[in-house]
Length: 189
Image 1 (spheres, rainbow, N blue to C red):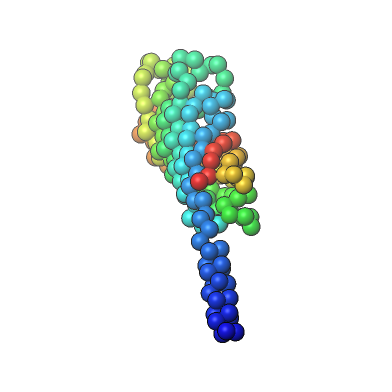
Image 2 (image 1 turned 90 degrees about the vertical axis):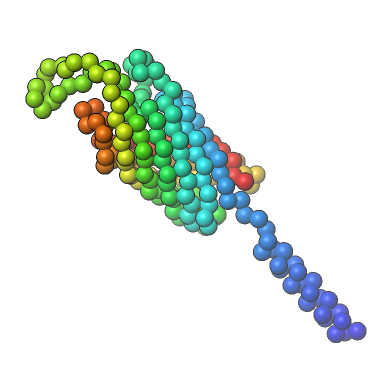
């Protein structure tokens, strides 16, 4: 009888420990960048997949809703559209939480927002003819930030960084530097 009780006890203990390992880890996040909506009139959604407790990868999609005729209304993004894949490395003891460093690439489209450009090489003081052009650019950059997650899965993150356009299809008006800033709200599932 003692052997039977010992075997049952060992089986129950093994099953209990096995169940602790099967606790599902939430690895997906969907976020919206509230800062871009409020300050820049741009919609910016992100999806992030958590690889492990220290790293993740994801992508952001930004669409600038500001009318090019009203850029004088406030702060602007030069980018009309941006697709940004990123990789993050976290430096905290909690699962994908706390301070992080981010490396990103960005494909962005910039419009000649004022319809004019200046030829600084041949004549820096003469305004050239009105143009309506677009520049397709590819940038790489880095960001730093912090992510905070509630026990129910609510996510808040804040980050800032800068990238450099390493390819520009139209150098007459395309910017050299691109920003990556945000205060995002989302959900982890």
